Length: 140
Image 1 (cartoon, helix red, strand yellow):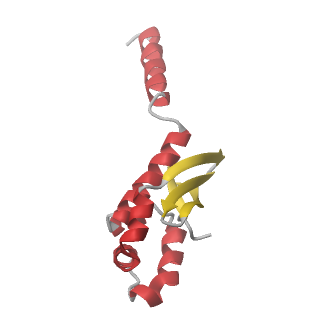
Image 2 (cartoon, one colour):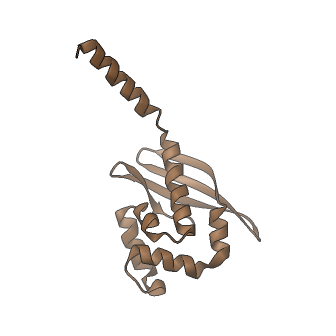
Image 3 (tube, helix red, strand yellow):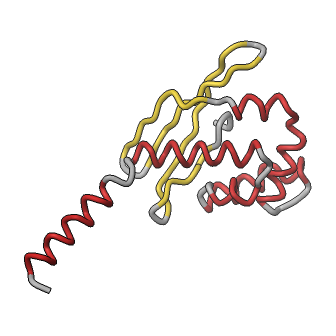
């Protein structure tokens, strides 16, 4: 393969990779996937979207309520204990602001309840090349 052809292929691959989505889109996707997993009681997915330290802290924090040290089971149990109103609010949550600074991101969510609109913040961090939740909505 000539140098010119190889250079053209590498340039095309770089452009294709650059067009695969922005950092802001990746952050939004992580938050939306986390919310969807929580709402659906999919603890395995929700936990996979947390940083390793956040998973550990989460389980320690909720162990007395959910009576398990398994992150996925804890999410499913919390979801069932939270009831339909919390799930509905999270299902309808809208991302209203995303701020990215290096390996950290802050996402503002707006939810509507019977009491009116409410905002909460979700914190994320890059871990192993992927955006992961470090503080879920309403926990800080």
